[in-house]
Image (cartoon, rainbow, N blue to C red; front, side, top):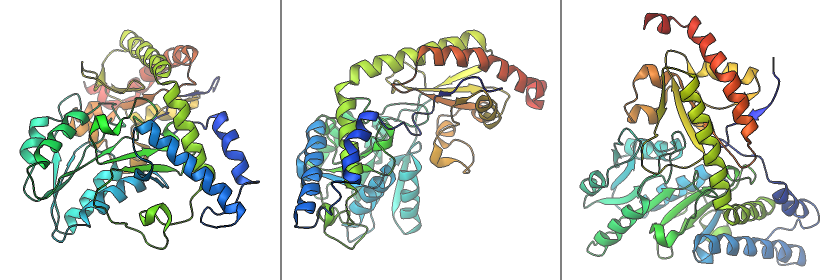
Length: 394
């Protein structure tokens, strides 16, 4: 049955760029020293570590000593959240949103179980929070606001710069600063990230979302931010993230981020064109669909979330896979945890949410990929609906 392979799950992970692999390769073999060692082997990899840190700092408009390498975006989120709240003697208040990645939601739920107070902000039908809601949620004991830059399921972008501006204003008159963290895993390598423009104190990135390997992340921590480590055992990364640095992957994420930032506009136009071609084709060829998070506000360009009413999203994924098409029902990290909390927060009705599929594009996708999906998808949806008792009922 399978005729072609089409990968439209780039928000889950991306292929590693060939240039990135080439850049990493020497650090698996010839340049293998421990960067903490003082001999020539160690100095060689220490130089690569420093150069990578400088490159990422420059691209984020940050200082070199504000960049920390971690093992993933999830680890970066955890360090940011627990690292901030652990600096306080009293258990304070944290603000986040109902549509965060579980790498933020689960730490916040853990805090609640241990006596902290957490406010989960609502979103509108497009997946965007209200700045006024955030302002009203601020309390005297608020220590941290964590709001993602772009949502991983529907692509909705939050008003990060506006939030940062507001928090800077109120912090000028507060005894206890409210720190601001954003999970930028879905925007890193896709839009220009300038930490000074965004006015954030902490920012999370994950390499495998922009053609670097899995297992390497970055956490930006603004100078002067009071933060404590959550793991212990070494002085690496200024003791905030102890453990021998993964030099090949550090080199890889720096190279990938450099390549991505050099081609931001070109890649953005490319994936936006493909997304719109698929969206228009689905609207034209398939009845009873809902485009989730497709309002006039800005959204990340590579994500298209569509509800195919009266069928199961997972059944649709299986059928698509039989034809060589890879997509997803949402976050890969949420598989096995029930329906989409994002669509629920956006008040998408349960029947529609059950049939939601996320298509996410990357720089290696082509119009032929879209044409192939539009050739197979209508037939698959029709077949599944004819078997669906829900479809027959409605």
